[in-house]
Image (cartoon, rainbow, N blue to C red):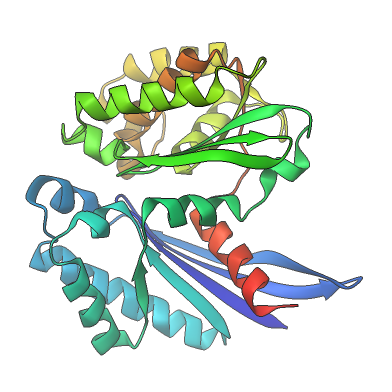
Length: 293
């Protein structure tokens, strides 16, 4: 059996996904084996100071060392490590990539927004949905939001915007970026009636679980709106202690909600599908496409 690993260094959390790859009836399939998430919050440094602090850099190296040890123990044969928005914007991003290589021998790639979008879409979740519908694919991260318009299962347009949950919490989201996103989304969806949404990322997955929808069923705009109203009626402390949210989820879930709701209102989307996949799953799929026949 083959084992692949995906490392996703985001603005909020750093993830390691180890997946088992097997062949059934001539088709390669992947199955999640282990998923580890470490909430490092690199975005706080990158968006406020344009630089990753020595403390956060040291924590990242420790995390990557632990990931490397786990990958060795699990006998991982192929891996891909990608860093997104926070490392893109940190002036010492390249320095940290070199430090990680020296300390752990892991190669880390700082990826551009378009490649990030392509990796997320490598999950090909639109294939499991109604091919005759048009979808706006929304992936909300800590530092950026990736948008794509899928028509009959084909991506017609996609763009990355510097609007994300950590960026909003740090008041580093810019009015002109929101305007740019609004213009882009309206221009690229106005030709389509009955647009549906696809949402990926940790926050929308948590919101979907809170909505108690059936797997595969979409979540309505109305449901998302009422969840948002419920969440904002609690203080941060109450969201942690009363609603049982992790401390690193309890704050970012509010701006995430705002991004999804804003996009759905701009486009008239009434329903959003929430597949349980993200960047790390996309990396595994990409590895499979590249390494297997």
